[in-house]
Image (cartoon, rainbow, N blue to C red; front, side, top):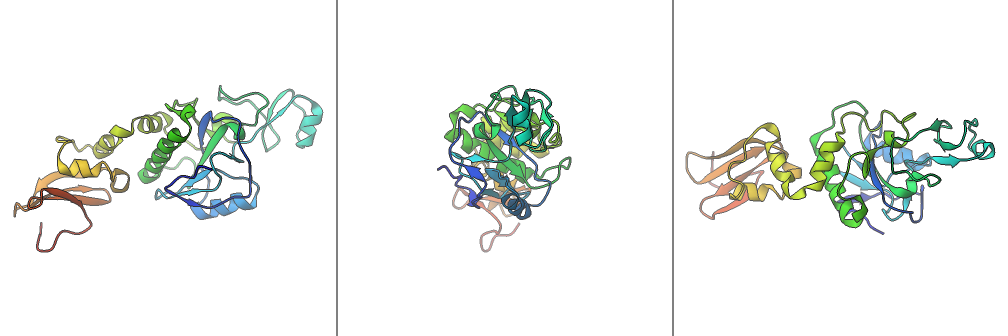
Length: 273
């Protein structure tokens, strides 16, 4: 029962054992807060495997070897089947939980198989159309990298195929989900190249990475998801005792006496800038 090591376990009763395949990871927007969305899904018969907060925290609600209820469609071939959903008969095809007939954009959907059984769903705290915090996107990238190690069928991530939007499954009622703030091509590129992601993260604010082999960049690559992009490149203090580089959420300094780099948030005793 795979559970993401970086997640808080928040089990949901809304799931089914097992799955048929793992064809894609599906990104969603919760249209609400982090904890409130977890509670809402649990109380309303829906679920997602994961939800990522605006700050980058992750909660897992369903084991990834089981089926969450977040991307569901019903395949109907007769008026009687549609009637069981309370939906007006509109011909053979997919019907969404809102009782509308839909035409999925996702090319790899299997006729007759509920897409819940073929996908892993990732919710995100927030509202569609709003800019998403970098920490949230970075946490999603890290989660996707882990998922690819668990389910090789997902890798490499291909936008529209193995990395999709809820809107790709239901373009009628979920056209807003997850919204334009989620650039699937960029997210897939980061998830497919984990060894280089830290270099791109450093340079996101336009700060050049001139000496990737130096101690500060080498320590940064293990903490880039926490620190964010570089805002001020490495420079030596007047004392010559250390060099320091500043990032969006902290700093790293190199101490000449030990020839090692260290994470902030404080400097060693007796050392000043």
